[in-house]
Image 1: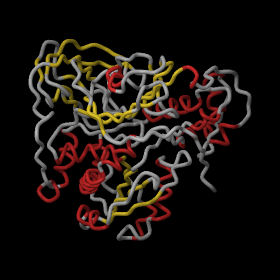
Image 2: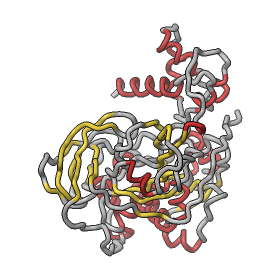
Image 3: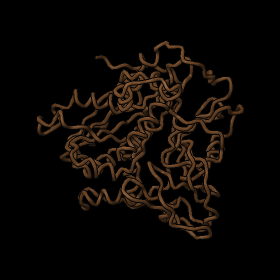
Image 4: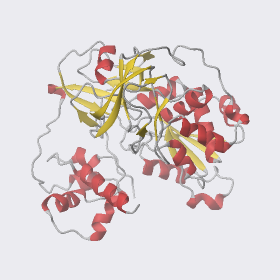
Length: 436
């Protein structure tokens, strides 16, 4: 069966360099930086230093470090980039930096540290895997993927309207390779497979890859990114299964192997945290959209309010009617410019009123477009009707929601503008939580 994909015509932005944002006078640091809530180790009035651990948790909950030195002004609940609410510590800048602006000494973990130590360092530095929208702790994912023989690294963006991961892959190729190698070491992977977009990425020469990966096999597979969802987990798994024969030392394991996937931003974070001995206190955010004066790729401190990113881009040429976090297809619309940047924020897109699509919802017209668009053949309109209109639905039909690949093509195809993907995703999350 041929894989169903869609073509979207989004504007392409070209970024010549990475800009560094000014240090914020106030950083709003959330306890929710990944898939769960950490617990604050500080209280109002405390003094914190740059890189100090200010929140921690267990298992898949990543620790959080202070992005700036300062005073804890208050701890209160704020709206997050994903639309949820979470407790936040408001840090007022004061004091000296320990990492920012200082010379970094490269720490070679290639031979000095054992694989378990690498996992421990990933956990201590608060690295999350931003490959998909689950944003789990990278250390926890590696620990629970001991049987994986392959590490898959996506070097392009999942959303065709975003370009952050592609920019990181092209601008910091050596660092991404080094970070991927450390992940492969921690995973005990036999092969690292890089998925790249031929329009933006140039494969490094053989000498470079051999010097980085040593005995670990390394392969580069070109992906046709003109069609969506070319970067989804299921699509890339099929690509691996099709090309995996010569990758594994034991061909009998071919059908049993499912790669652990990361993106270029995650690999880059591993390099910076482990090789430069720095906790994860900043991230790279793409700020674009027709309402902006200028689109930029910006390195910004975690906790910086979004309005500061707009100032870095010279402000808006037109009044923004919509602010979208993390892409036009699966992103979240927010209205508060004081929402803070978190570890999982990849892009901020500003649209003016004339560039907005029709957002008025109507009754389902039973056109079947959502079923035709779905790569997994899910009948999302029936699942939506079941939960909204209490329409009877078989158990097997409901279970098909677990096949959802989170591409949100059903939403894009629906002329009634119904929240089909959100309904399917909500049901799947509730079922998964009930099984824990």
